Image (cartoon, rainbow, N blue to C red; front, side, top):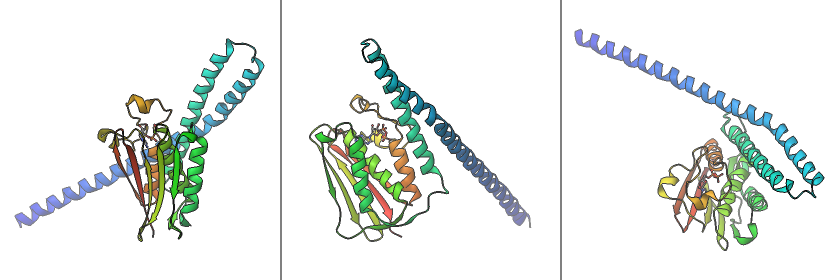
Length: 257
Ligand code: ADP
């Protein structure tokens, strides 16, 4: 009877520990949810004033076009406001990608979104002409339950990075493969590569490599965090393989059903 009593006592304390843990997890989730909503609200509120500053800077530049002293300072302000705008846009994308309620997934062929994602990335790249981007798609559709905008964003961010972190003359290959129970999207570049230590951290919000070559490129450190969230929302996984000075390969696996 004594032994049973001891066992019961242990059971009660384990149950209590489990309950406390569940409560703590619940509180952390609620805090994380609050953080997401706070970021989204602030970012959203910043959009209009940023647009006003940008428009007035353009106007002022025209008004003082003859003033050689004003131009450098207006350019500096323009670069600053563009950087803020990029951070705000990425924060909104991160908040959207982290929202567990949205968006619903539907069966879609990934190929058209790979094509449009590559196009969008090339359009916003600083020097798309110096790199060769090849797209390798299968003839048959690759259907997965997905949010089409999310798919496109994955491609835009991965290809955008491949273009940003590659010296002139390199090739970027974007391939799509149907692996039966999952789809595989592969983005390979011949760029500057990512050190083993950095590979562990690149999917973390705001992480940017300390490598001065990488630092030359503008960025928010949010692009891969956004990709990671979207992939997680699809029940998928993302991997990176890279060698400094040789290039990088990002692989996204998305379950087919
Ligand atoms: P950002 O590019 O805005 O800094 P990301 O989250 O997209 O932010 O990427 C995080 C970091 O990972 C980058 O700062 C860069 O150091 C590294 N990185 C990402 N993609 C590549 C790539 N294709 N080649 C080399 N480095 C990369």
